[in-house]
Length: 202
Image 1 (cartoon, rainbow, N blue to C red):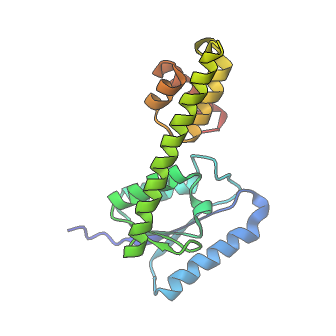
Image 2 (cartoon, rainbow, N blue to C red):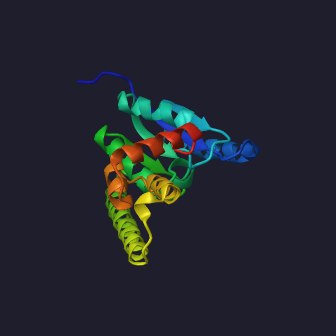
């Protein structure tokens, strides 16, 4: 039996350093949630002045590490938009929380995965994310087929491939799927993703 004392992780974020008041408002709401639910053991993680599109956020990374270490009982956020950068990112995080038996609460959306309704909403979000992936795949395939029908040599258009790889990467598709849709080898995708990381865009 795991005897470690777990705590509730509270996460908040603002896009710019000028939104300090917004960050404080989020913190107050999160702490008020703890007060109303008689939660004494909690830890606040907040990223200030960091865009939601960034895949790596210092405090979010620390919090996720704590989740994986088994130190967190539940994660509470102010809203989806302050936590996840996309539907796919949200789904991925929720799946990881579920794997580690960590509940997820979003105050603005009134979602609590420890409840029956919350679990049902999680299932709906999963279905939406899967539909989104399929629609993206279909649009890309249609676009490539139309371009090829017009005689465009997509395989040799490095700049076009680069742009397409980045767009698909931001949609959280796998490297294998990106290579398949773009019509290039996996190593090409890996090189482009490394460049994105170097530029701070992934």
